[in-house]
Image (cartoon, rainbow, N blue to C red; front, side, top):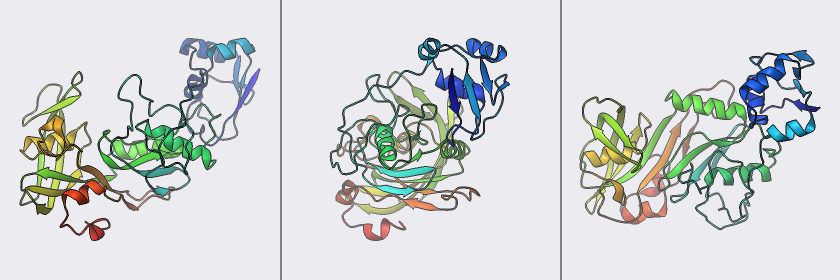
Length: 337
């Protein structure tokens, strides 16, 4: 027999969901059968699977140890401890952590051999100044382990990024530290309740701001999107707003409001109006080798039971932006743009 005492990070979900994570190798049919036969109980009572869990609830698995081990979640492979130091922790509270992700760092799994953003975070060493292109989620999780904000033995919840940034896009990445934090952030982003603003350096001169719309199609094989002006089957609507801030040497610095949040949306949308992002070779840039796109600012709506509610967070711009736009007052721009 094994006993699972529901902790803070496991509460707020159905028992069948938790069991599916804890005994991830078992079929749903097996789990429901065990509940019907009272081989799995909740607070010493029969359960059917749809019961909501609360902190302190006790789940008992009246199963042979061999059976439990057979169906239990397999431990993740430990990777080398050569993960980067977090560029900057912009904000942290009990439920979430927001960091300034450097360009070149994965926030989500891109290839089969990459470390997945949803895997357990590896040991993160704050004192290490080494930068690696390994998975970002692992580094954040290592930080949470080091600060004792996350217990890796709690295998039914895994801290993970709530929003996504392309490998070569820098800036603000939200990471859920608790189940509550992850669920709230994922819901807010899905509802488009968090205002997301980016800085982009584009080729050519843009004289005035505009709100542009279109329809986006993705080619999964090429990992590239294309835009259409009219609705097409399978295409998703996108909406982007931009405001020019500064012009220098044939390039414009833009403040971009990402209204919808599709894959490569800003990159493809700006390219479609003949102003590709500097360094973005995939979408037509002929200048530079580093993509000049930065997730600059997040504005959170009021959230009654979360500290981040109503706050505005800003990420410092990379040095490459200052290199391309030498005449812009970045000291002011880092705060207000």
